[in-house]
Length: 177
Image 1 (cartoon, one colour):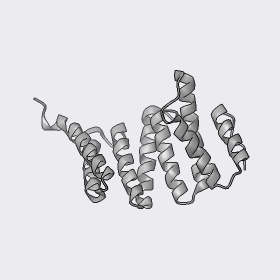
Image 2: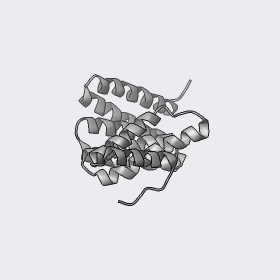
Image 3: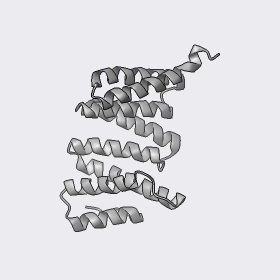
Image 4: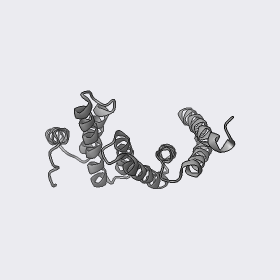
């Protein structure tokens, strides 16, 4: 039999999964309390710098973003990114996903110049994944589209966007603006 102490992480997983279902069915207030409980359990069980905590921070930030609580979401996205960079290194796919989420928030708050290098790095990480593994990461094409979309929002021409996307994929240093 497992003691209660060892079952807490399993409870956090179940709470998170239920919160995901509630978020998907637009029961956002109910989802928030479950995300917060899952986060508290994982922080207590694993400590504040564990990758599971990054998952919970990210999920709560996604909920805040969906409810236009962007000032509350940003520090959670940044916290999740910092944990994953420390846990997995700066070029891990989990880091790329956190970069994309933060870049989306920065774009939504019209901080396009801050979002651009994050989105570019998101694309670079998935490009390098493909080089290492011999196949595209499932998020690779979304990374291209997200980066190109951000560049379009920044007002770049289609030709300039194509050049910037190609240089990101090829690993060329970013040109200064």
